[in-house]
Length: 218
Image 1 (cartoon, helix red, strand yellow):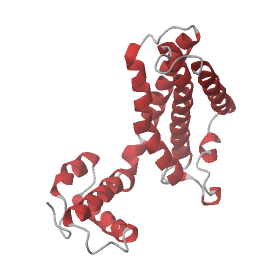
Image 2 (image 1 turned 120 degrees about the horizontal axis):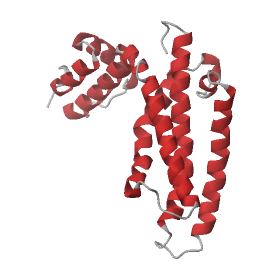
Image 3 (image 1 turned 45 degrees about the horizontal axis):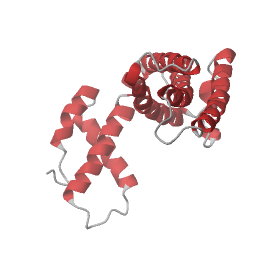
Image 4 (image 1 turned 180 degrees about the horizontal axis):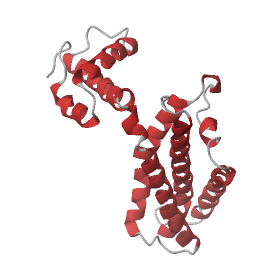
């Protein structure tokens, strides 16, 4: 257990890996914690306070104390997004041919792998959007990309909706739990393509946005 007024020792190895000093780490976290929990219950246990503080510190170290390290990964995340798009497209084409994915059951890993890439994209897209954008955290990134790439995202979005509607219609003709694997994969792979193309284009846009703004925070 770690007390309310002491640093959480089990988080320190993560701090060192991310390249932030414990002193900078604590300075960020103290201010963030007070702003996020101004009405914290007195009945909150020390363990709960430790969890909240460690979570805030880890997020602060990754996103604020070391932005240059994260920005250097944008091209890597973009490449992973387009790789996931390609794998989803292959699975989808096999589904159109009424054949299971050549990746077998590993194709479903594409469903899970979306989240560790998409969550940081949403975070950084919101972090870099102009103040006048309101809730729109996409347009400023799409504007950084070539026109054909923006059209690819739009086409994929429309196709994913139509494909899923067709999947629901076709699946309704089969008994429950007897829908063919190729049909299920074809239905879901349309959405996989949409998310992965958004990840690839989004991180590409973040990379170009950072280069254009030089030393400004991306």
